[in-house]
Image 1 (cartoon, rainbow, N blue to C red):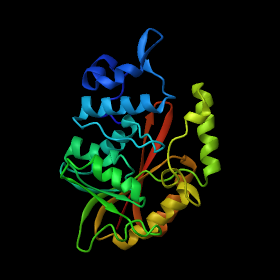
Image 2: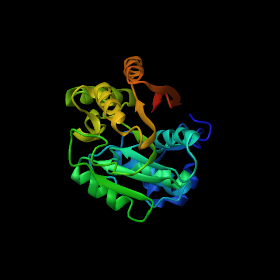
Image 3: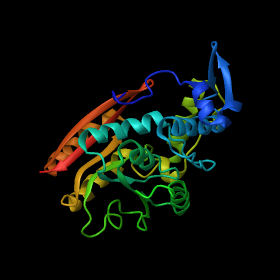
Amino acid sequence: MHPNNTHQEDYPFNELIKAHPPLSKFTVQFQDKPSINFNDPLALKALNNALLVHYYGITPIEYPHGYLLAPVPSRVDYIHHIADENKAGAKGLDIGCGATAIYSLLGASCYNFNMIGSEVSEKSYAFAKANTKTVPSIDIRLQSDRGSIFKNIIQKGEYLDFTICNPPFFSSEQEAMKAFQRKAKNLGGDKKHNFSGTADELWCNGGEALFIKRMIKESNDYKTQVGLFSTLVSQKGNIARLEKLLTKKQANHYVKSSKIGSKIVHYLFWKFR
């Protein structure tokens, strides 16, 4: 994890319950320590809200049923890496902010970032607006063109210090289901209840590699309006071909990585010369 990520150790459940009492009904004893059933979406929602309240002073947010449950430790890790490259108060865009707008909320809380969250789903847009309504430094914008990423979102004459993105990982619903079933099996739970996330959040034609390629190509049109572009890359095998495209586009680029639990995540950054 990033050195500034406060979630390096076990969760302090007693403190979290004090911050967000609803967590208590999901707490169980595991190996003589308090924990939760990480296969239970309701327990995960309660834990996430407890972390947001306790560590970041963020009012509990609404997690709509069936939508992606974004773990706080991994989301804030990305924000810390962004903060390495930007000053407090910088202005950023979260591409595909989702119903929770979790990156925008954490960016605003941790570093006083002024955040724009974009969404293609009208339902996710509505939830994101509701979840951020008390934070004046967050602006949620609806993307009316599913074929565009920056167009219609970055306004004429507007300058952004950075962009972030957690792209759809999978190329199809079938691929996503298989991955979630493997995860559920590893956790020893019911595979039917471990699947969370909507089509807009989890898959797109070509998966993350094609989505990020589209982003890189379109970013060239906004190189004078954005200081630093970035995206999360879940599959290390995609990085080389993405860097090849960035070199072709004459963009300076680099990769940062973090170990979140048992998984290595990668962040790809680029800016134009």
